[in-house]
View: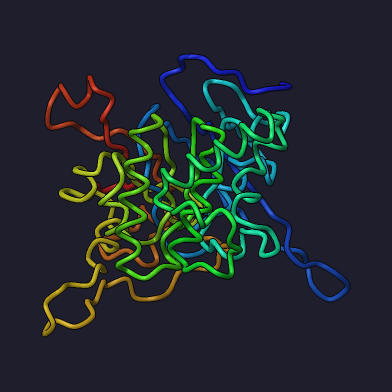
Length: 334
């Protein structure tokens, strides 16, 4: 495939049995080990929606993002954007349809370039417009993300963290992409600034008709933003559903533990005990059966022997099923 074509596919993004395996170590004294960072992930993100992807650090969220951006090839499976597979896609053509917003705005911005150069770079690379037209587009984009005109002549080091993230957002959106991968875009910011950036992202989504894959370990952030959620554990999706389904009636014990781990605003209650016991297992030596069973409070003998499949669960209404709002969960006892 040489390019990613625009058409009216109802899905902006589709992942089909996507996997990524790394070989670790090896040498004279040590055998190499296999790490399955992403394991058979299938996900569908409708156009114009925000899909939240949550899970603990090391569960494979960022590896998944790199595959979507074409930065690392999958070991198996397909990524479809607008119904077209992106494996072997022309990277330049792909960049017109999918753009990232990273966690740390300072490390993703060139400190030696002025903001106008940084935001206008995609236009120059793709040869869109004259230099005068590019300057106008940059000015318009900076205004849309809430930055003053004078910001165009500043350097990243002269700006606050929140302003730098606005620059990163402006650069990502100046090409009007279909899909934006937001990889922990607010975790490096103060809480007060986080809310401003999240509201900005929602406003821009409506303005440009964007689709977001929003990767985070912060459930409060995802609850504010996402239409649907996918919960990831040890490289696999263990539960998926609408925001309401996940936050009001989580089915998977891991999802329930994540929600229980959110800090309460009541000062006397302290840090909650989420009852997961041991830490996350070694991903190079995953447990047999269900990957979560060593930490699961409701595990039964079958859980260590047989891996559950991610299956649709009974809906409370036919309307939910018709609208494609079906929830899925990978648990023998959901």
